[in-house]
Image (cartoon, rainbow, N blue to C red; front, side, top):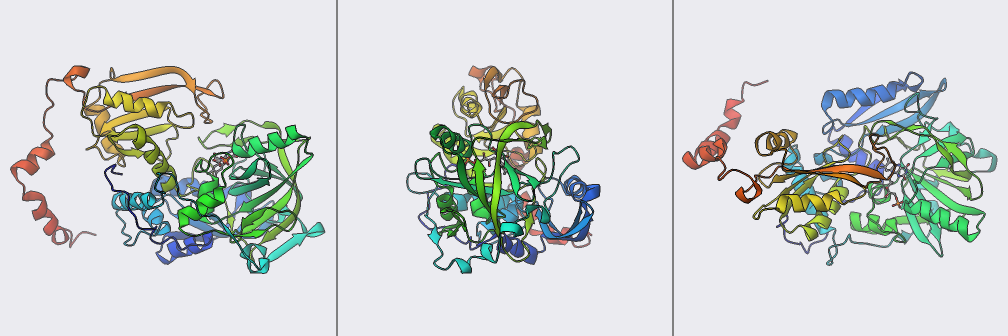
Length: 502
Ligand SMILES: Cc1cc2nc3c(=O)[nH]c(=O)nc-3n(C[C@H](O)[C@H](O)[C@H](O)COP(=O)(O)O)c2cc1C
């Protein structure tokens, strides 16, 4: 994305989707969802299919898929189960209302980033729009079916055990909602392990906002916390709940409204005062006991490695389940599929860092490479590449390896990044930070909160930085300079060249 894009005054363009169904149906109408009738998860068929899909299509192109019926523990269960709904730039463009959708993923990336810019308020923060409450709760799709008392049985839905090494079946596309008069509102995505028909574990990692609220309630002397888990929430709620858009005590549901450009519709829970997204697939309501816990996990985590069992983790006694008719089960194959819209997270980092690095021209986190981040800068002065990299390396939630390139490198294209490493970078233009804070579950760490980090300055080094006296010109630049008509000529005849190409 280009830092020079002016701050627009117009509101967000489209984003009319109320629910994940609405969004996926739009993708489906464009032929971008793969459907399978039935799969046997007792043989881990759905998991293996997710891996193969990415093996064959590539991580940036693998489509969303839906499975109608799934065999679990010997029983055929009704789906549909949805996975990998986000992440391809043309699909993100559909989600955020880009007017002209094409299959050119770079063009769509730029268009989506411009849409993100429209979602900022005048101070440069994410715009917020408070939710509105439905006056008639019966109009809420998430309450089409209400299960209380003996009817509560969370096991009867098609939650998957993703991997034989996981501790059990998980509800892993959640928005866990809390609302406390003293500690405020919070919505966070935390994986939840199905324990039996009426109990479910909840895994906010230490220092997450949900963890801070539950821990503070415990310290206050509360015996239980009322909690609601929205499953399969609309894309904007899920995006706000699974990222750090909202600070502590800020309400993610307001950010969801800001992202979609109009208020989120909420409805009151059956068993508490908590307001939940009305268009979610399912709401699981209950109480988290604050003086007991259950061991939870192990679970295959976001880096693609098995994470440890978490002793004495939080769990919920389920009091009520409300859901749509035939609720969609949205599943994360953690560390593999793309489970949340990517654009706001990438844009948020870009917007944050361009305040610190005025000549920042682009920022990208390549998919499948947690901990690696690439930025481009319009370098003018010696030391700028390394200085920019240091800002990113200081982030405790990201960025073990920071690669800085010149602005002419297309940071969406891994081959161009590798080109910069091969042709512009000298390994001496790097900085290794031996030990600093990092909170991500990187399996190579030896301490849960610490990591070493590396800044790779792959910008063309100036003479003062130890680089060559002058850099040889690029062949392509010389071509354009010496034969300015050559690309227009080829572009004009492109369809003719390819007319017999199958
Ligand atoms: C699919 C998915 C699953 C996640 N699971 C967890 C989890 O189990 N525990 C956790 O602490 N964070 C998890 N996260 C990351 C958090 O949702 C994210 O850090 C969020 O900002 C937490 O909300 P909070 O800031 O309100 O605590 C997950 C994210 C995604 C996209």
